[in-house]
Image (cartoon, rainbow, N blue to C red; front, side, top):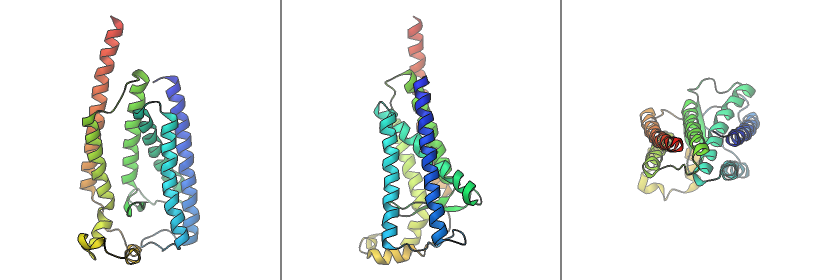
Length: 246
């Protein structure tokens, strides 16, 4: 890994960790206003303008992380890697700072709302931390090999595994909420439900169980994709080093 790569990773780390603090600070304010006795399900309904601001804040966070990747990376693969690296660091330090500021979560198995787009994502804190760590692992491998070979890329089979695994993880995050909604409306009828009725139902939602099997399978598929990427680029680097010796 070149010195320039290490320098870029350092600043990407500091940027993402600072984002984690800002995110945690916002949550501290929101919980002081809406959950003065401590956060718990079901959710406290937010006023329309506040809910819109929260939605836009989440979208803005993704734009910032995408911007980090685009500015830090040189190739498309490297830009993706820095986005993943920033996302992973941001997510982990979000929980680190919440623990330092308000002593939450109580444990890694504490339930949390992870995302609101396109529906509510929930899961024990451990689950997003695992995903974030996996993202950082992939990003570091990409930057490691990119530092040696400018043509480093993620192959089609690797993309297929990463995408399939991410799909499984996504389904695990929305599994419990989806099961809750489908108790009241069928999948076919769901599209005709007035948004107000769906909102009223959502704020009564209390997580029951997390689909660890689906989550674990998704993670294993992602790790298989990362493993293929590592082995392929490791072999390619070895060949290049042997050619340089000739």
